[in-house]
Image 1 (cartoon, one colour):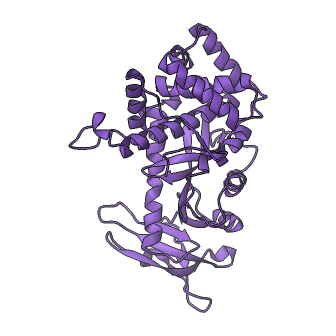
Image 2 (cartoon, one colour; image 1 turned 135 degrees about the vertical axis):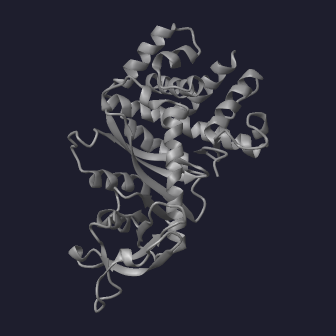
Image 3 (cartoon, helix red, strand yellow; image 1 turned 120 degrees about the vertical axis):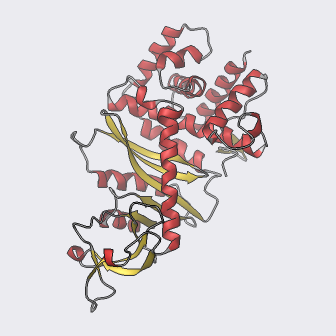
Length: 374
């Protein structure tokens, strides 16, 4: 039996056990798409079909994938919700985790609203919704979709885990603050504060209001404290951080439910790791923007397979690093390959050597989990 066929059969069997309510006729194409994405390093269905082993012809496999992606009976969000406890089983063991919520465009077709878990130098997808671009018609507001995604993730988080959500300027405001308070999360949000429309703060009910731009005036300055903002909403108490690094064009103006200061700036700095994740999914590895799919429902099902492939590639890359195998694929004098690319290199090298690939899932004492992601 070929190594690729062994890998495919292993993943199919594992997904069938992890998703016992999903028909095998739907599990099998999902497994083929996941491993095909890893081998093809592309979302192109003809390329995936050419890399998936089996007796069927490439056109036959491609038609099978298209039927699966267009099958309205397959609910990718429901499948992901069944997978999420397994994905998080051995990962959420630390007392503090950082989540990022950040929309990313898929050219002119759609926007992907995605929550992810900061893990190393990447962000692992946890929940998402795909919507039309901003000029399209949304059935629900972005705030409603964000609250729905937060509720799905919060249901899987241990009660002892302190969750901090980091969002960028297009999300910052009282709506996301209230949403985090409702699920018991902390928040670090960058807010819009143009000089032409000053935002005012005050230190207390009897204190005069002042423009926040007076607190920090030049690069290299920082300020943090507890203030009251948003007079139109009754002067909300927040932690305010203004962080202007040397060489930066402007400062970060951050609000939080906790006191402002260096810790908030440190948490917000980790938001940039979602950009590396989007590059992996798009131009750097999987080329999501090159898909020919046009309907949101089909793209949503493709994202289910892509996010599973991303988790597996991360698992393989981190395992290769821990086993001291990085030097086999990357330069010794500097690092050029990201963890996802390392995972794909490890997969291909293991396949060529005829060795057994590190499986996606593992089971211990009746509990399924993803090993190696800690």
